[in-house]
Amino acid sequence: MIRAIVGANWGDEGKGKITDMCAEQSDIVVRFQGGANAGHTIINEYGRFALHLLPSGVFHKNITNVIANGVALNIEALKNEMQTLKDAGIEFNLLIGERTQVLLPHHVLMDTYEEERLGDRKFGSTKSGIAPFYADKYSKTGLQVWELYNKERLLDKLEHMYEKINIQFKYLYNKPEIDYKEVYNTLLEYAEFIKDNVADTSKFLRDAIKEGKNILFEGQLGSLKDTDHGIYPYVTSSSTLAGYAAVGAGIPPYAIDNITVITKAYSSAVGEGPFVSEIFGDEADELRKRGGDKGEFGATTGRPRRVGYFDAVATRYGCEIQGATEVCMTCLDVLSYMDKLPICTGYEWNGKVYKEFLTTDKLYEAKPVYTVLPGWKSDIRGIKSYDELPKEAKDYIEFVEKEIGVKISMVSNGPRREEILYR
Image (cartoon, rainbow, N blue to C red; front, side, top):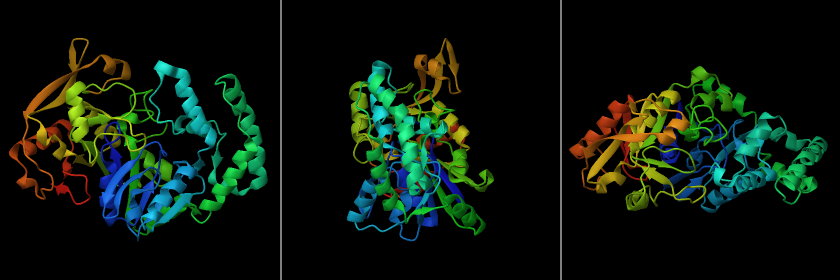
């Protein structure tokens, strides 16, 4: 099976747990887009981990993990992440695409300086350098991994690259200039560190498909953060859709036969942008405190996540543009304290109720239209059988399923790998 696991919403849906769980049936786990700007939290027998670049298959010894060409490769972050796993006694196999683009030190600085410059008009960036990285990539001024091993070419390229960058740093941001020779020396260290992991990952994956291997593609963030189809401009800088797995990994698009889309039983988001079903005050604080395994705080930034009621309009849209073949609902146990469970089933805008997802300007003005279901008011964490759930919990799942139009085949009722229900 060739499966993609992706998010339906703003990210933070619980994809890490599901990827870690599904990796047990996989031969290869692949990261195909994004960078260290978002994390997948995983809890297993080794402990609690927040992975940012490493695929979630690293906890399974016989799996090959791949960082494919579409990823923004922050080698410093990767070194730290690999050391964390090594310290925990975890051994894993890793391949890095030779055409993968390398995130450079100025990308992080530029991201930080630009958010400062924008002030109130900022995008809510994680300041991980992602937007400047992709800007360089698509303007063809970035570096691919293979270029790290041609020293003469690398030094020449950096010299000309930083002529332009330093003008921007000095005159636009009023910040210190960068010594390209220091960057060069750092990149030589990076090249040495990853040299045994570098491979033609696209060919490796195409060969694996021919051999009938089970491959799992792990997406970062969610549908609403997609550059082309999300809440632009409050999006990430790469495609978060399952269809991009074929592009980022270099495989045929028809090879992907299962698209598992993850959504929470409520809504959460990090960063700026419209969020129709968002809640505030004590109500939000209570949900945030109870959410996830350690509350609703970003795995990368530690920022408090914005939270709200389940948004069926946004989730249906997210499932449709992902091409979902099945849905996994996570964090159902979090809602066990609530008397009533509002579900956003429409957007009221300009005197009319819409069932379809709207463009960013309209979303800012839209009001949520709720259908309210009764809560179950009992602890459901660890229940193994769907039939053992309270009637109200099953009614909630089945109502959401009808609204989004895709089968909910899995329900997560706790943060641990084994806390999952199959339907």
